[in-house]
Amino acid sequence: MPSFYLETFGCQMNEHDSEQVAGLLAAQGYRRVATPQEADLVLYNTCSVREKAERKAFSRLSEWRRGRADGKVIGVLGCMAQRRGEEILGREPQVRFVCGPASYRRLPEFLARLEAGERRVAGLEAADGETFETPLIQRDSPFRAYVTIVEGCDKSCAYCVVPSARGRERSRASEAILAEARQLAAEGYTEVQLLGQNVNCYRDPAAPGCDFVALLGRVAETPGLRQVRFTTSHPRDFTPGIVAAIDAHPTLANHIHLPVQSGSTRVLERMQRLYTREEYLERIAWIRAARRQIAISTDVIVGFPGETEADFEQTLRLLEEVRFDSMFSFKYSPRPGTAALALDGQVPEQERGRRLVLLQGLQREIQTRRHAALVGTVHEALVEGFNPATGQWIGRTSQNRVLNFTSPGGRADNLLGRYVEARVTRAGPNSLAGERVGNLL
Ligand code: SAM
Ligand code: SF4
Image (cartoon, rainbow, N blue to C red; front, side):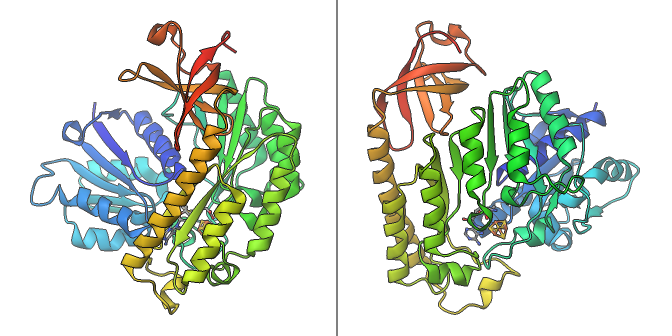
């Protein structure tokens, strides 16, 4: 039986693509192994969003140069394969195939061609009107499942390579999504996470009346599911209906990821984000007005071309005003083929680094204060793992906070994949610690 090793870089979308690729390979008789050394087929599912991610992937590929691949088939998947496939084949002779996200359905054919003796194979067709439907998904988690609802992206944020790597926005048919959700519930999954670069733009191609809010409601009502999450929401397309849906459906998690990118309207305009600071804050006000306490997380880019000290100050002030529950933050990374490359006012690397440190320091303070206020409160959490070093179970609350907790029977309590209630006894900036209370839910 041939074996494969698959390493994934980047976002949840890539993680889910890897689950699909692993399913396809298993159906072809491949067995997954834990190290590249044991594998006949070594695959890297790559990310192009920032330069650092691409550099890391190239460094992995360089490990197989000069005959070290020794009969192994080395392949590159994902956004970097899509964007730089020809170049990779040109400069990395050890790579036998490259395959972008739009070509995964053809993987069995590519493998067959390699087995038949073809030296190199490329699947680099542009993303077309179809979405990728496969029942062959080898999921990483036995209780949480990703479900793609929208592929690609039709926005054109000036810094972003996603539209060029993943193509035009395509929604999956709601019936296919709902059938998958029902199937997952039947298999024992209790949490579903709906994925798309911009889930708010969802539009059922088969039933034009079904928009994102309608879809959310229908998925949330799937018998057997206990928690439904969705990511990413784009502020431009975010509506009060989404907040109303969360209020109406207890299975929808108390969490919205709403990337702001910058607190300065001037910078947002240069980024082509299609909303102002005030419009973003209006959406925050809708979320804060909900009956449920909905946690809000965000993404921020510092040092976008033309970002002045005053613009950056506005981002800091926005953080203080919104008091996000968590934040992913990045130094602007210039990407080939993006509109931002032509902008003036490139911010020096060192200055980008300085701003990132300041931003992260402020957010850390905000999280520390927010978390401290939670000491003594009780939360429901889905148990994701056990940490033998601390003797704590690792849980995640509906608000997407990590809650590490002790349980009377320790590891023997066998809580993986269960829902528990735990009381917070201590709080740090990035996680909560506590103890299990009451019975299993
Ligand atoms: N579609 C989502 C959205 O619009 O928010 C996220 C897409 S992207 C994979 C995830 C995050 O990476 C973005 O929200 C942004 O903060 C960051 N990002 C994208 N391009 C970047 C770049 N060139 N430099 C630094 N960060 C970038
Ligand atoms: Fe990139 Fe903007 Fe599309 Fe998000 S919405 S994937 S940041 S172009």
